[in-house]
Image 1 (cartoon, protein in one colour):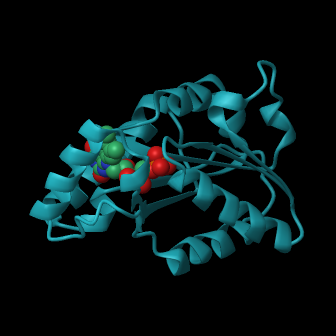
Image 2: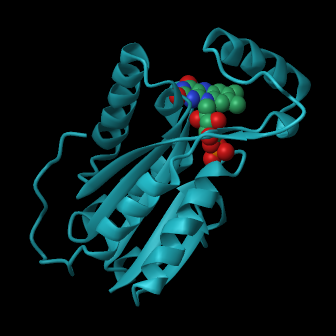
Length: 189
Ligand SMILES: Cc1cc2nc3c(=O)[nH]c(=O)nc-3n(C[C@H](O)[C@H](O)[C@H](O)COP(=O)(O)O)c2cc1C
């Protein structure tokens, strides 16, 4: 099987998760390409890939518009491929019922708006890279983190990603079989 992982990442956490998944698929013997959605060549042949994994972080309540556009543009091909979607967010850090409800709606919106029906969906806690925020973002995020009872030490970055969960997802992806050619059943994230 060959596998394409397309990600959208603003501060690098989704890229890091995409890279880990790529390493795992490669270690399982698959041919893998991991690519930033903003760096995809104009005429990219999505049909050449057996498994297509897309991942995006959440910003202001939405997954990446560029990634949505990519999935929408290749919807017909993706309907006949093994596909997976992973979401990276602050909501998955806090895990409050409200945050989880919002996140479930955001994931559902991504699938609905793109017409994508992924075989697998995963949600991962992201990071708070204070040192890489501009001053205003750092101030706003610090206030939010304080309210949530998490670290306000802006002198360093904080990673909340559960790497064991990422690796479990990677193993699941490595076990997905070749496409059957049949349209896939819808999934509820
Ligand atoms: C300006 C800004 C807005 C954000 N908005 C949301 C949001 O609406 N919901 C959420 O769950 N997380 C939100 N986050 C948290 C990010 O999803 C999280 O930091 C993630 O790790 C970013 O991944 P990336 O580095 O791949 O972009 C926001 C972060 C920033 C800096």
